[in-house]
Length: 340
Image 1 (spheres, rainbow, N blue to C red):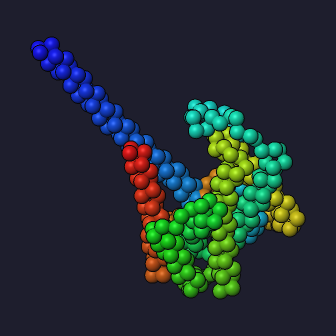
Image 2 (image 1 turned 90 degrees about the vertical axis):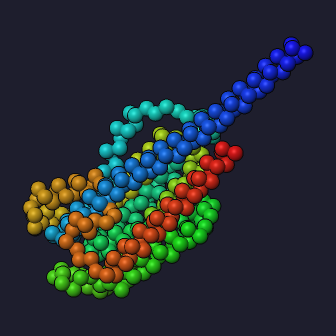
Image 3 (image 1 turned 30 degrees about the horizontal axis):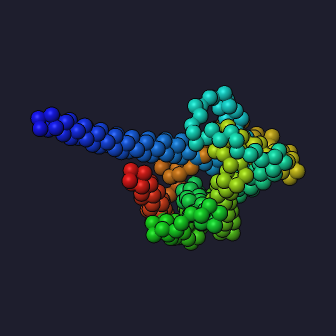
């Protein structure tokens, strides 16, 4: 009986240790998932900071160029695209392969398919940048930036049809708020105290061009995601970089053709000579516009913020927060599923 009791105690101890080990593994797995979640959101915050900082600089310099004598919209479009060579050194960066991206057995698209893909996306990018240039030339920076924020709504709209994005209450709320914020700006025709204000007709043209450009950007993002799913079938570092470089190259070439075909290049030297801040400032503005791209830039400009713009800004912020909160809920749901 003594030996049987001892064996029973050993068995119970072993079971207890196994149970404790299982609980420890579960706790470690949960902690690992939480760390990954926090790191993912930290990456999103850093990427967002880079995007917003670059766009802020580019938009401010772009608007400054138009205000001080710049007139060529083709050149303004070109500087939005011609900065892509700065990304070429990234090809020298070697990243460790993850199991998710080591799918070397996936069939590769043909060179013709890739050419058509890069050309189509490049043409769309060139058209978007041209419409953004027209909008920036006719609109105050604050109004322009608020309208650009509707890209999030367009991205969600096109994702519903192209990427199987589901409409949740928070997503719908985001769409309504962003749409309302832009609609308010239709009734703005600029600051009456601004001696260089544009006419009502040009304001409407600028508004529509910026809105169409935001729609085009949303469509482009959805098409890029669809391309990764249906054509490229991989999302490796090199494939993503190739897509960015080649579509930018196509867009740059298309814009240069437009610059010379329109005859705008003939007036560039005169435009530079008549620039209010001088030739050096003209070139530096073009250079830094090519390096960066805008949100909330009126904090650094002299544009007057009235009640309509404040309301539109708050609605836009609420729409963005609603959109991000839905992503947070989706991420939490996925984490809960993995733990179970």
